[in-house]
Length: 170
Image (cartoon, rainbow, N blue to C red):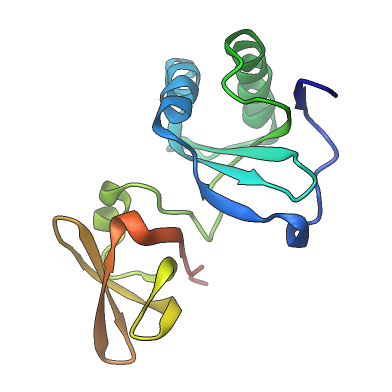
């Protein structure tokens, strides 16, 4: 499509070039659709591909969990609003999903909610020579999340987090 969205035809994940939390105005628009429908907006990711396309991935949740029908309903409603508002230029794919067992963490409050849990964090700028951290979420400070990795604490600036996900517990 020249300008608009597609709901199918996702690219293989290795083709995705940049992945990050969606911009605040886009998240605000998405929240304005999702929350009145009775869902929690966990977060939204905006990913670009080398071919110029993009993917808007929206994570929703409820206390009862998320079913396929929930994703379809939100996708349908959100597609209509995105078509009218045009917050994304060019081709893009909309994906609505539950957060899953490896729940993404987008907001400071998410890190506070899951203190003591194992998580995988990736920062945009190396800290002590590394960008990837897997460990226990120890605490949240004003602008940082502190993760305990093999007995050592690392202070990671929230604004430098590229991705953050819980490690599934079985």
